[in-house]
Length: 488
Image 1 (cartoon, rainbow, N blue to C red):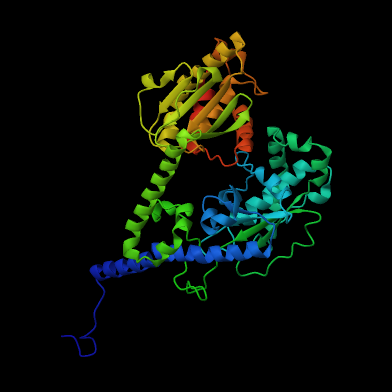
Image 2 (image 1 turned 180 degrees about the horizontal axis):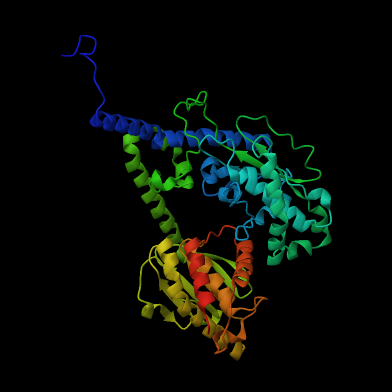
């Protein structure tokens, strides 16, 4: 018989533990609700707006993928791609694929003598590794490559209290190898060999840092000697209880992992509808977002369709005088080019189609790999032989017959950032020589041999011309697989 002292005690059971874990899970999910995420993003964006106002003349650059959530569209002047993984301890890297060289001209042309790069972080960190280590390495490598004879500009700057002296030293030891890799691409030649006026205006890069919990850095004394890269961390660090003063239910780095919570919402759609989204109860948000996303897609397609009669429904960027890549818009892909244009057009459509139907004309391929995603990137390797041989035959005929105007290749996909870029890379290697001229043996029986160095240099040429491009790993693996296995 239990005594009176223990008669009312309730001992835990497996079922009780299960229920307790479920309650904790429900609490966590409620804290990470869409409403709390969007409100946290709004608060962080307000801080970014304050930073932009404090440094007038500094263009605001969003570090993708998440940076655009924290920059209101009127303030955004561009995007950059600095990966936090390139700054992880022991894995420091200077990306030869993501060169971000477009920031050099953006900074040089700015009124303030610098730019603001916006990113966020989570898990209680003060700064993302992209801002505390990846960008400092990028600045140091570029300074050494651009000013090899001026040791004064070769310093590696890292944020005190965030990067330890030991890690700083280890990062610095890798810089010479990164410089050699960058110089091997040859992409800085045009800047270094520019006219005297542009050469005299070039300055080394100097990173500085700002977060919501630190004083505004003073850049006045730096701008005479440096182009300032102001690394702005938009997110706040919660206290031990997970709270931020005056911001209940705050989520640090709220825009991370959008595939798990955003329901297709993008930064552009968020800022176009942010007040309505913030005023809507949590239970109704998924349906509202679904409506906004569908309406946004429809609006984009209608704009493209409306423009058909007034202007072209595609845009591209010239990579060489013979090759361009870009995006098509509208409900249907652009028609085959006119025979008088002397253009060979490769268009990727959203549907999956039989390869036997791809040739629409002697100068046009419509390639159907399906939805523009990783599966399409992996499937691309099986399409590249037909695409490259088709283009090579067009070029050979144009060169043999000395057609006018000179032949050109146009590659388009629905995003203009992935599949078309990967295909342009394959074509640049397969059909063109080192200087970008049509390669005579591209459509002949002579075998061609490609290696990683050749592919890397050609990709750098494309990424310099198209800094907004973002070819996926699957797409680049398809290109490498096709080219490195090709034997003519």
